[in-house]
Image (cartoon, one colour):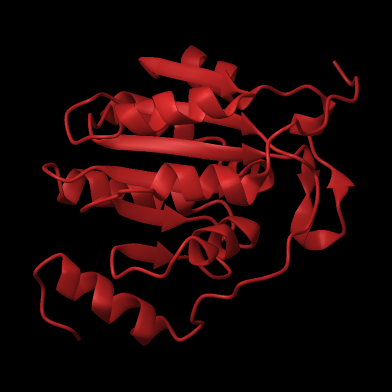
Length: 198
């Protein structure tokens, strides 16, 4: 352990755009920072729930949403740094085993929001293998766009719990900021789920 294995060959914006193409009623939870910017760059949508200042919480928010909406597919798009902060969530998610939840970890091997310091994933920690050891029924490390297409084809309300580590280039793309107003984020999402705004 400790070797530098940071990032990978894929363009993160292209990956996210491909995952969200023809998304239909897919519910999307974003980790803070670049994953939120990437999802916003792919097109704002009422079914997007952007997290701000909630580092480590994307996977658990996705779990709660998947449990509350069992007939809807839920996709968490997060980064390796954010997922590392919420690492214990993988065990809880595996025990709960929601069949409609997919976690896509955009792994550039760096803490992109704090200055591009090398992350634990950049030093060889394999998040997909950790998820597999917790009991996730399907995990993968993705380095090719064809495998992104395969992951997209696996999204669905009854396709099983999944986690993919997607190896992306370590770079900061121009920021495409989603709204920061919590009420503005919450109410369209609630309404898309059939609930009244509050």
